Image (tube, rainbow, N blue to C red):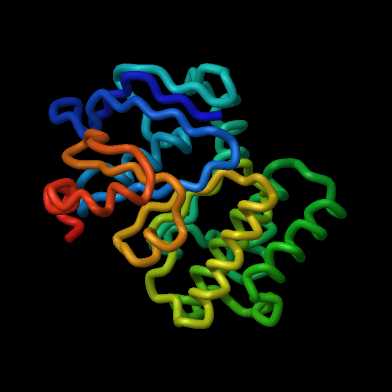
Length: 236
């Protein structure tokens, strides 16, 4: 589904933030991006969504090259959704229901489809009771759930979560795990960036370790037994 070939990226045109990234992600995979702050995880996430444009290399989505034209990016972003760590970066409407509706309406869906998708997303995220609340009155955890619902309502094929368990209470952490399982059963491709090692070890299937803008390891749970790798990536 996703294929990054020899990707190099820089924010300032001088220092390489990502170096020779080669990554293939198949439909339905459930993988974690792991690494310390500044390792390049967020840059990879923004690359997958088309926000970051590489100066070298190629990005293929479902075997089609991303040319970074407006039409291509609009289609890509409807297929690859990101739930950011800071929900205030993501909430765009004054009240909850308007925020969750925003994405589907901008995709041009008919109103009945929007209504059904929004209702389902809000039920999954346990925010039906918040639908008429103004977003600025919500707690951090409530804002996170609204942001997740806003992405789910657009029914993307790939969903990227940035530090999704941060500030979720134990009950909603369990609910989030149930959500991930449901998305997996629906065939969604799930990518999670996190520092929560117990959560990653318990829930992941594939792990991408990132260090100084490079992928240094790619594999299963056995990688957590590699003490040298864990220390080099500052995850221990």
